[in-house]
Length: 117
Length: 111
Image (cartoon, rainbow over all chains, first blue to last red; front, side, top):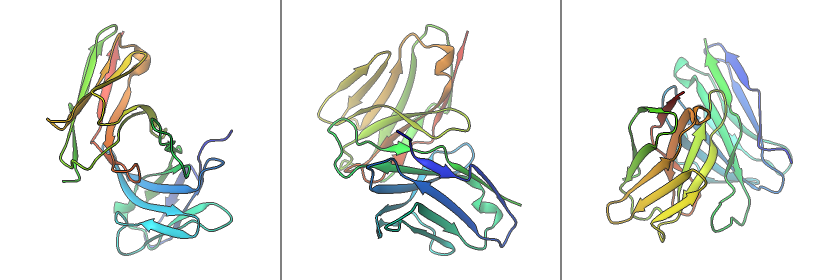
């Protein structure tokens, strides 16, 4: 039973390039969440998606960032024209439709560490 | 109002001692309070969680104490071990849709 799979684990991009981060949720999980973690800080919510729907994107920067979770395939977080300030660890989490009383089944992947040079 | 404040930033405890990490929140609509453990290079892993209808939850050496009136909750790690050395995050959410995380506590257990 594979966990939440994120790839690549490490990504280096030059300023101005595009970064594409992929997340495959756990089997049976249809909800995906993206979080960003800056060095020495907690995780900050970015976006919550279900298949083919963006449910809450209140944490997404208004420009250059977009996310999708297509009917088939992984969820993608896309960052266009990256800048040095985008350097961070990006974590994806997934959860099932119906969460248990004590455990919402919210499981994180190991993250993608983006470095912009 | 969406913030969760966590303290201390770093904590050093002797092996066998009790580690205590505290968090405070403002949003009274929060109804789910998990604690996550994160090792370097890894994603956060759920440690233990509590709902506001109970004041304490214990799982093994880990206990959450919850004070609804004070809007505070804390993690206690009993008999702390070197393997517990990690960064710990408290979090809160309403309906478990999106988590608001504290700033994290770097815990070091000295052998």
